[in-house]
Length: 319
Image 1 (cartoon, helix red, strand yellow):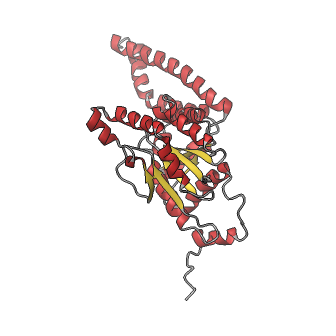
Image 2: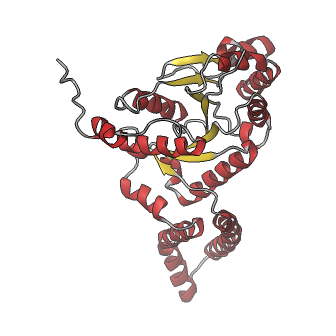
Image 3: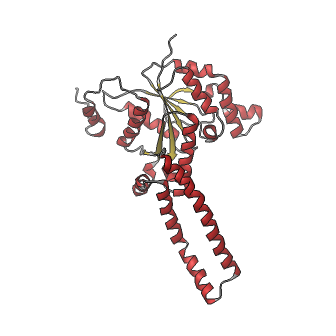
């Protein structure tokens, strides 16, 4: 039997970042593209703790094992139960292989993965799944899509944290990697532009630090006036020393981390607004280029075809 080598997006990211929403948006978007670019996107669930889906399921790991069953039978907690389920999948990879064999080599599959970030950064279980995919011949047709919440990234310290998580997942999985900033429809556009338009993590952090200093300025003024008049209490003086010392230590560490991100320039984010078809199409285009999807297909008339989606959507004149 000749196995299909379908194109695969492994959709990862922290819990609550919008992975399932991303999968639904891509599936619906591709189904509504113009005739020349329309494609059927399959979505499979690899999260044994998932409950609700907004997309059509191709296959579901819960048919093999679920967190609820493991917690009930083995008395494990949610995190321990999830880890047990993923390790169980690793011991029964023939199930996954049989599911993947059902797809032809020109089909497109999204794997909606668990949100426990330690599965990608600390425990090598997802890396072992990726390695097995390579052994099955899925080399060059698989990409990792790391989804991070825009409401998380618009805060400079959290942006740095999110960037480090992304970098860690990218190094762990060793796959072509695309970072998606989800939920941009829930954030002010100026905030998104500020994050994406900043040239470096260091620059973004310095801007945030400047704002924080001005927020603390009134308290510093109050203590300074009290000190000059000789009325500052021991508590006031101790507070100022503590704030200064803490800020100096934090700044030194944070700037060193920012330098790591900036020196290698390996982390960037593509904004996703699920209410904007052009935004969804832009994300899809980046991932398609990463896995070289569609390079062997005919592209004549694609510009005119896009007008059906972004412009005149009325193609019901065939009466």
